[in-house]
Image (cartoon, rainbow, N blue to C red; front, top):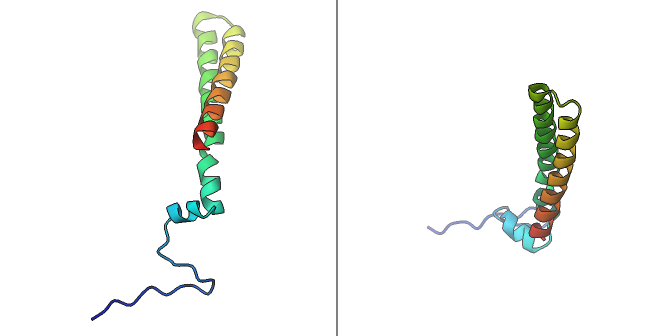
Length: 90
């Protein structure tokens, strides 16, 4: 008994097609997925550095310098990571 080939949808797309095939053809779903993590990575890195700075303020009484330095370091580290990842994705 022979296997029936998969039916295509009305637009002629094969339902078994993978995202890798979609990516080779320039599909939009793969494009936004490649960059979707960058905003979350930026926010998490920045927030961790700010909370570390606030903790240093309370631990050593450095207010507001721990938060200021933590914020500046967080912005710098976040921008570096986003630029590095965006360049690696291309």
